[in-house]
Length: 264
Image (cartoon, rainbow, N blue to C red; front, side, top):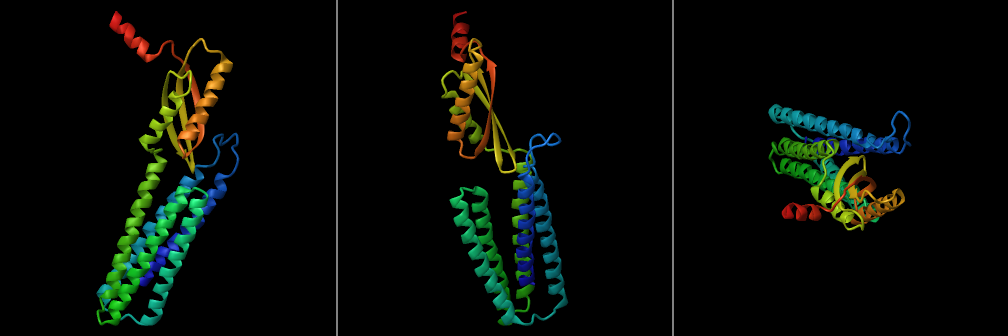
């Protein structure tokens, strides 16, 4: 049962990789009149399939482990099962190393995080191996208990994936990203104040900067300032892929307003 739970866990990883691959393929489609902002949200929708497969695997592994525990069924073919568990450990470690190397080369935080996930999968296989060793030593309950342990591990992964997915779909963002974007915008000559907003669209982080400019500034100068702001934000925030500058007229600097208020 421990090995079955581990197999389900690895199978869910494979199936979810297929779902994510389809999401990547759809997200590359160019914008259309029907979807003017493009199809990058397809990656977020593929995450729903990922979460569903993981939770379904956890339920199935838990139910089967319970049945094995109460049925007092003997565990057979221990040697073959141990070989399968060892293959799971080696295979997951190899995949984890490959993802880590590629992720660092292409600067993909997602792939690096997935490499860590694959490394944890190897621990799941190790749990199944421990269960089979316990059975070999005469502890019949070792296998279903290992199955429960692997089930809990799948639940943990499911919780992490679901939490991250909800955070992504709700356009959750690290406040430090917005702080860095605002500081970069304010460093550009001519920008009197700046307010940043951001949201995720698939793997693309879009940041909007609403900046206050002198109302006497020409349109050409304002456009040039906006371009400088976009370049500054891209340089300051590594994750950002798109920056949009929205100009609004501001007659005076905030410090000037405060000084005049004191004088009055």
